[in-house]
Length: 93
Image (cartoon, rainbow, N blue to C red; front, side, top):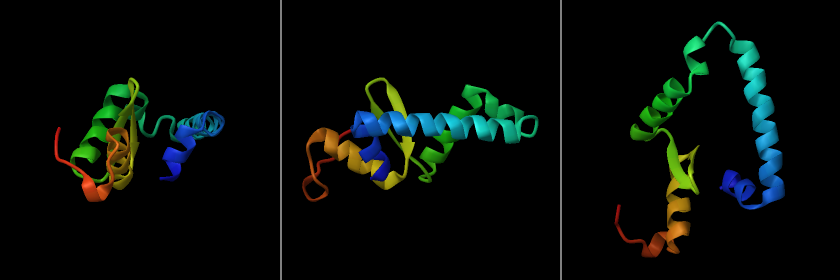
């Protein structure tokens, strides 16, 4: 839920995105040469999708972007977009 709170408020969203960019650069510098496959988007997305299918991660789409989070947060986000609560949800794909 914490990530969703950051994504909803534009000011917090921008702060989060800047910090994530800093972390990405820091990780890239530390792993340069060690994990060459991770610098390719296709491999990274395949790995994230695999973790999503196994239930380790959750994924939701906002506008045209996909966000990876905990499975619980992904379900809560989907219910929120449909205007439902966990007690009154319906099953549809």
